[in-house]
Length: 193
Image (cartoon, rainbow, N blue to C red; front, top):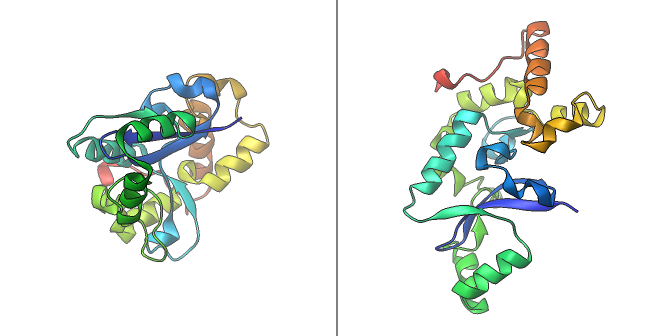
């Protein structure tokens, strides 16, 4: 059974989706999960492409989320989420908070054709087309490529014990090899921001 892991502001239940996984993964640290994923085309990139956020942007996003001034922690939705919400809000209050976008919703969900309006306030770099192009060129951030490689069992299954395989040395080395073979690809560098 797969569990959705979320980083949750427990004051108002604004959330960031940080990954899917097994129940045993609840002991992982925040940066061990795959992290927030984005569709670049929802942010203005000319092609449809789903990507992981680079480490530096992910860390910046979580820091901005933390600085909203409230305690946050990792929770997983489902029964536990419902229990926490019900202790803080009535059903009507949580529905109103969701409808008004003041709580009980994911910040990293695209709002119709408006893009990630709640995410970009915390991470304005995502509004820069140059940043989006750099993300698109990094094979290590390409979710489709990761899924293909993972399905072919190129990645050792044991790397999943302590963190998501996107953070594994094996995956990074595989992507570095792709970059060395294809000049159209490049790794996203933190110093470029």
